Image 1: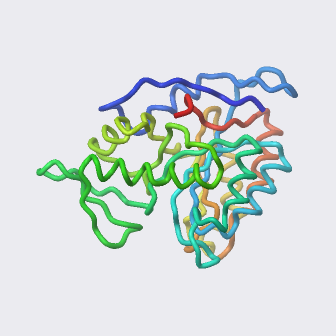
Image 2: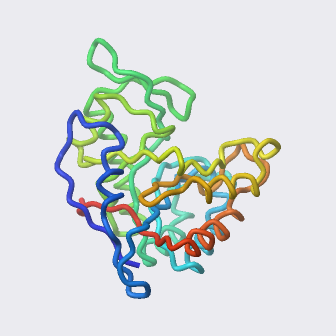
Length: 258
Protein backbone atom coordinates (compact mmCIF):
# COMPACT_ATOMS: atom_id res chain seq x y z
CA UNK A 1 0.00 0.00 0.00
CA UNK A 2 1.47 3.35 -1.06
CA UNK A 3 1.98 6.09 1.47
CA UNK A 4 0.54 9.41 0.32
CA UNK A 5 2.79 12.37 0.97
CA UNK A 6 1.22 15.79 0.52
CA UNK A 7 3.10 18.98 1.19
CA UNK A 8 0.55 21.54 2.36
CA UNK A 9 1.33 25.23 2.73
CA UNK A 10 0.97 26.83 6.14
CA UNK A 11 -2.62 27.89 6.76
CA UNK A 12 -4.18 30.61 8.87
CA UNK A 13 -7.85 31.05 7.99
CA UNK A 14 -8.70 27.97 5.97
CA UNK A 15 -11.48 25.69 7.19
CA UNK A 16 -10.59 22.78 9.43
CA UNK A 17 -11.25 20.12 6.81
CA UNK A 18 -9.08 21.61 4.04
CA UNK A 19 -7.32 18.32 3.44
CA UNK A 20 -10.33 16.36 2.23
CA UNK A 21 -10.82 17.76 -1.25
CA UNK A 22 -7.13 17.41 -2.07
CA UNK A 23 -7.03 13.81 -0.92
CA UNK A 24 -10.18 12.81 -2.74
CA UNK A 25 -8.57 13.74 -6.05
CA UNK A 26 -5.32 11.85 -5.51
CA UNK A 27 -4.85 8.33 -6.85
CA UNK A 28 -2.98 5.82 -4.70
CA UNK A 29 -0.58 3.45 -6.35
CA UNK A 30 -0.51 -0.06 -4.92
CA UNK A 31 1.97 -2.73 -6.07
CA UNK A 32 -0.78 -5.31 -5.79
CA UNK A 33 -3.56 -3.53 -7.64
CA UNK A 34 -1.96 -0.89 -9.86
CA UNK A 35 -3.52 2.56 -9.78
CA UNK A 36 -6.50 2.94 -7.47
CA UNK A 37 -8.74 5.98 -7.68
CA UNK A 38 -11.29 4.74 -5.11
CA UNK A 39 -9.37 5.43 -1.92
CA UNK A 40 -10.69 5.44 1.64
CA UNK A 41 -8.75 6.91 4.57
CA UNK A 42 -9.28 5.10 7.87
CA UNK A 43 -8.57 7.22 10.95
CA UNK A 44 -8.67 6.30 14.64
CA UNK A 45 -8.67 8.51 17.73
CA UNK A 46 -7.16 7.03 20.87
CA UNK A 47 -10.21 6.71 23.12
CA UNK A 48 -9.92 4.20 25.98
CA UNK A 49 -7.69 1.81 23.96
CA UNK A 50 -9.82 -1.26 24.84
CA UNK A 51 -9.96 -2.31 21.18
CA UNK A 52 -6.47 -1.12 20.24
CA UNK A 53 -4.93 -4.58 19.88
CA UNK A 54 -7.93 -5.96 17.96
CA UNK A 55 -7.89 -3.03 15.56
CA UNK A 56 -4.13 -3.34 15.01
CA UNK A 57 -4.51 -7.06 14.34
CA UNK A 58 -7.26 -6.47 11.77
CA UNK A 59 -5.34 -3.72 9.99
CA UNK A 60 -2.28 -5.95 9.80
CA UNK A 61 -4.31 -8.94 8.65
CA UNK A 62 -5.96 -6.89 5.90
CA UNK A 63 -2.67 -5.13 5.01
CA UNK A 64 -4.26 -1.72 5.46
CA UNK A 65 -2.49 1.42 6.69
CA UNK A 66 -4.41 3.96 8.77
CA UNK A 67 -3.93 7.26 10.56
CA UNK A 68 -3.97 7.49 14.36
CA UNK A 69 -4.74 10.75 16.17
CA UNK A 70 -3.15 10.62 19.60
CA UNK A 71 -4.13 12.06 22.96
CA UNK A 72 -3.00 10.93 26.40
CA UNK A 73 -6.45 9.61 27.29
CA UNK A 74 -7.24 7.36 30.22
CA UNK A 75 -7.40 3.73 29.13
CA UNK A 76 -9.28 0.63 30.20
CA UNK A 77 -6.12 -0.44 32.07
CA UNK A 78 -6.37 2.63 34.30
CA UNK A 79 -3.27 4.16 32.77
CA UNK A 80 -2.97 6.57 29.83
CA UNK A 81 -2.55 6.01 26.11
CA UNK A 82 0.88 7.64 25.92
CA UNK A 83 2.30 6.13 29.10
CA UNK A 84 5.49 4.04 28.79
CA UNK A 85 3.34 0.92 29.21
CA UNK A 86 2.04 1.56 25.67
CA UNK A 87 5.52 1.94 24.18
CA UNK A 88 5.53 -1.45 22.43
CA UNK A 89 2.09 -0.87 20.98
CA UNK A 90 3.02 2.43 19.37
CA UNK A 91 6.43 1.21 18.22
CA UNK A 92 4.73 -1.69 16.45
CA UNK A 93 2.34 0.67 14.66
CA UNK A 94 5.27 2.85 13.56
CA UNK A 95 7.11 -0.18 12.17
CA UNK A 96 3.97 -1.17 10.24
CA UNK A 97 3.93 2.14 8.39
CA UNK A 98 0.86 3.88 9.80
CA UNK A 99 0.58 7.67 10.08
CA UNK A 100 0.21 9.66 13.30
CA UNK A 101 -1.39 13.01 14.04
CA UNK A 102 -2.05 15.16 17.08
CA UNK A 103 -5.30 15.02 19.12
CA UNK A 104 -4.14 17.38 21.95
CA UNK A 105 -2.37 15.96 24.99
CA UNK A 106 -5.22 16.27 27.50
CA UNK A 107 -8.00 15.63 24.97
CA UNK A 108 -9.04 19.27 25.06
CA UNK A 109 -12.45 20.23 23.68
CA UNK A 110 -12.28 23.67 22.08
CA UNK A 111 -15.23 25.92 22.86
CA UNK A 112 -14.77 29.43 21.50
CA UNK A 113 -12.38 32.29 20.93
CA UNK A 114 -12.61 34.92 23.68
CA UNK A 115 -12.69 38.72 23.26
CA UNK A 116 -9.38 39.01 25.14
CA UNK A 117 -7.64 36.95 22.43
CA UNK A 118 -7.53 33.70 24.38
CA UNK A 119 -9.25 30.40 23.61
CA UNK A 120 -11.76 28.79 25.97
CA UNK A 121 -11.56 25.00 26.14
CA UNK A 122 -12.39 22.12 28.45
CA UNK A 123 -10.11 19.27 29.44
CA UNK A 124 -11.83 16.08 28.30
CA UNK A 125 -15.19 17.90 28.57
CA UNK A 126 -14.41 18.65 32.22
CA UNK A 127 -12.50 21.55 33.83
CA UNK A 128 -12.29 24.67 31.71
CA UNK A 129 -8.97 26.14 30.67
CA UNK A 130 -8.05 29.31 28.77
CA UNK A 131 -5.20 29.15 26.25
CA UNK A 132 -3.07 31.83 24.71
CA UNK A 133 -1.08 30.86 21.62
CA UNK A 134 1.94 29.74 23.63
CA UNK A 135 -0.15 27.54 25.91
CA UNK A 136 -2.05 25.94 23.04
CA UNK A 137 1.18 25.19 21.21
CA UNK A 138 2.57 23.60 24.38
CA UNK A 139 -0.53 21.39 24.57
CA UNK A 140 0.13 20.14 21.04
CA UNK A 141 3.91 19.85 21.40
CA UNK A 142 3.58 17.67 24.48
CA UNK A 143 1.93 14.96 22.38
CA UNK A 144 4.76 15.04 19.87
CA UNK A 145 7.46 15.05 22.52
CA UNK A 146 5.87 12.12 24.34
CA UNK A 147 5.35 10.11 21.17
CA UNK A 148 8.94 10.76 20.10
CA UNK A 149 10.14 9.56 23.51
CA UNK A 150 8.19 6.33 23.05
CA UNK A 151 8.97 5.59 19.40
CA UNK A 152 11.78 7.83 18.14
CA UNK A 153 9.40 9.27 15.55
CA UNK A 154 7.71 12.64 15.38
CA UNK A 155 4.08 13.13 14.52
CA UNK A 156 3.14 14.42 11.09
CA UNK A 157 1.76 17.95 10.72
CA UNK A 158 -1.82 16.69 10.96
CA UNK A 159 -4.09 17.32 13.92
CA UNK A 160 -7.68 16.71 14.90
CA UNK A 161 -9.46 18.62 17.63
CA UNK A 162 -11.47 16.38 19.99
CA UNK A 163 -15.03 16.29 18.74
CA UNK A 164 -13.80 17.88 15.52
CA UNK A 165 -14.55 21.30 16.99
CA UNK A 166 -12.12 24.07 16.05
CA UNK A 167 -11.95 27.85 16.27
CA UNK A 168 -10.23 30.39 14.04
CA UNK A 169 -7.53 30.95 16.66
CA UNK A 170 -6.93 27.23 17.13
CA UNK A 171 -6.50 26.66 13.39
CA UNK A 172 -4.08 29.59 13.12
CA UNK A 173 -2.11 28.75 16.26
CA UNK A 174 -1.81 25.08 15.34
CA UNK A 175 -0.44 26.04 11.93
CA UNK A 176 2.11 28.35 13.53
CA UNK A 177 3.09 25.50 15.86
CA UNK A 178 3.79 23.00 13.08
CA UNK A 179 0.33 21.52 12.49
CA UNK A 180 -0.88 23.18 9.27
CA UNK A 181 -3.67 20.71 8.50
CA UNK A 182 -6.70 19.98 10.64
CA UNK A 183 -8.40 16.74 9.58
CA UNK A 184 -12.11 16.35 10.16
CA UNK A 185 -14.03 13.31 8.99
CA UNK A 186 -16.69 13.06 6.29
CA UNK A 187 -20.30 12.65 7.34
CA UNK A 188 -20.25 9.35 5.46
CA UNK A 189 -17.14 8.37 7.40
CA UNK A 190 -18.69 8.64 10.86
CA UNK A 191 -18.82 4.90 11.56
CA UNK A 192 -20.68 5.36 14.83
CA UNK A 193 -18.75 3.85 17.73
CA UNK A 194 -19.97 6.76 19.86
CA UNK A 195 -23.61 5.73 19.36
CA UNK A 196 -25.57 3.51 21.79
CA UNK A 197 -25.44 -0.18 20.89
CA UNK A 198 -29.14 -0.64 21.68
CA UNK A 199 -30.25 1.70 18.88
CA UNK A 200 -27.28 1.25 16.56
CA UNK A 201 -26.09 -2.37 16.63
CA UNK A 202 -22.99 -3.35 14.71
CA UNK A 203 -24.84 -4.86 11.75
CA UNK A 204 -26.79 -1.63 11.23
CA UNK A 205 -23.65 0.52 11.38
CA UNK A 206 -21.80 -1.78 9.00
CA UNK A 207 -24.57 -1.62 6.40
CA UNK A 208 -24.81 2.14 6.78
CA UNK A 209 -21.06 2.58 6.29
CA UNK A 210 -20.95 0.35 3.21
CA UNK A 211 -23.90 2.23 1.72
CA UNK A 212 -22.52 5.71 2.40
CA UNK A 213 -18.75 5.59 1.94
CA UNK A 214 -17.52 7.05 -1.33
CA UNK A 215 -14.08 7.57 -2.91
CA UNK A 216 -12.04 9.98 -0.82
CA UNK A 217 -14.02 9.41 2.39
CA UNK A 218 -12.15 10.02 5.65
CA UNK A 219 -13.61 7.72 8.29
CA UNK A 220 -13.42 8.03 12.07
CA UNK A 221 -13.48 5.43 14.84
CA UNK A 222 -11.78 5.11 18.23
CA UNK A 223 -9.39 2.53 19.64
CA UNK A 224 -12.07 1.93 22.24
CA UNK A 225 -14.80 4.10 23.67
CA UNK A 226 -16.41 4.19 27.10
CA UNK A 227 -19.95 4.96 26.00
CA UNK A 228 -20.60 1.93 23.80
CA UNK A 229 -21.54 -1.44 25.32
CA UNK A 230 -20.99 -3.47 22.12
CA UNK A 231 -17.47 -2.86 20.79
CA UNK A 232 -17.47 -1.72 17.19
CA UNK A 233 -14.04 -3.18 16.36
CA UNK A 234 -15.60 -6.41 14.97
CA UNK A 235 -17.16 -4.24 12.24
CA UNK A 236 -13.73 -3.22 10.95
CA UNK A 237 -12.78 -6.43 9.14
CA UNK A 238 -16.10 -6.85 7.26
CA UNK A 239 -16.05 -3.12 6.49
CA UNK A 240 -12.58 -3.32 4.94
CA UNK A 241 -13.41 -6.54 3.11
CA UNK A 242 -16.69 -5.14 1.83
CA UNK A 243 -15.01 -2.01 0.52
CA UNK A 244 -12.24 -4.02 -1.11
CA UNK A 245 -14.89 -6.10 -2.88
CA UNK A 246 -16.26 -2.86 -4.31
CA UNK A 247 -12.87 -1.84 -5.68
CA UNK A 248 -11.69 0.41 -2.88
CA UNK A 249 -8.15 0.67 -1.53
CA UNK A 250 -6.81 2.34 1.60
CA UNK A 251 -4.05 4.78 2.49
CA UNK A 252 -2.91 6.80 5.50
CA UNK A 253 -3.18 10.56 5.50
CA UNK A 254 0.16 12.31 5.40
CA UNK A 255 1.95 15.55 4.73
CA UNK A 256 5.66 16.26 4.91
CA UNK A 257 7.23 15.04 8.16
CA UNK A 258 7.64 17.75 10.77
